[in-house]
Image (cartoon, rainbow, N blue to C red; front, side, top):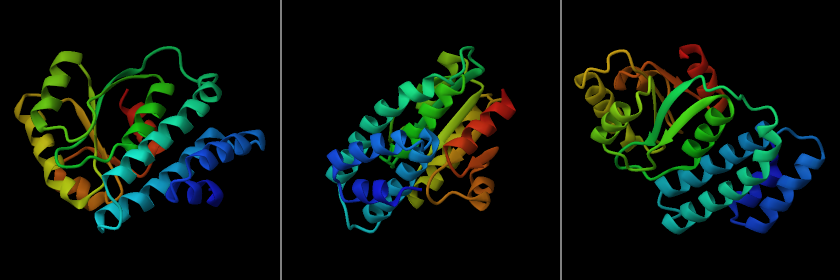
Length: 206
């Protein structure tokens, strides 16, 4: 982890964050390690938001910073990316939650590792996930949520997919507060601690 990068992001110093990202790459730090530092920073920002210590503008700026950082990383990572698609995945942050940072990292990594990703965005209702699976033929659904209030919408989305007849569609969940107990509560098939865990899970299902 790069504490310098984490500090720059959590302190909303965008120019510094981009400069540090380039410096880390020049020093030989892997894009994956840089993304992990971004994830650590976004968890800090997310907790501040949940505690009422930061607000929507900070979340939006953090999202813009992450997009700019991933734009720097993409050329490096694309060199090692997969050319053939392993499968189709529908991804989204569940209803009531507007956090998109972790979701964006996961979507980025899944795409680089050979999956065709349909990103539904944030605050996505269960029926939207159902519609997307019908339209795309996806065999995997990824549900993201950072706040504890995301647990019930995750459970509702899993139930909606099952009710729609998608018993064979695999569902994984992830986010700051997610663990095995939440996976069991929601009825999802797996949970991932980070983007690389999500990729490993998806590959095991491909």
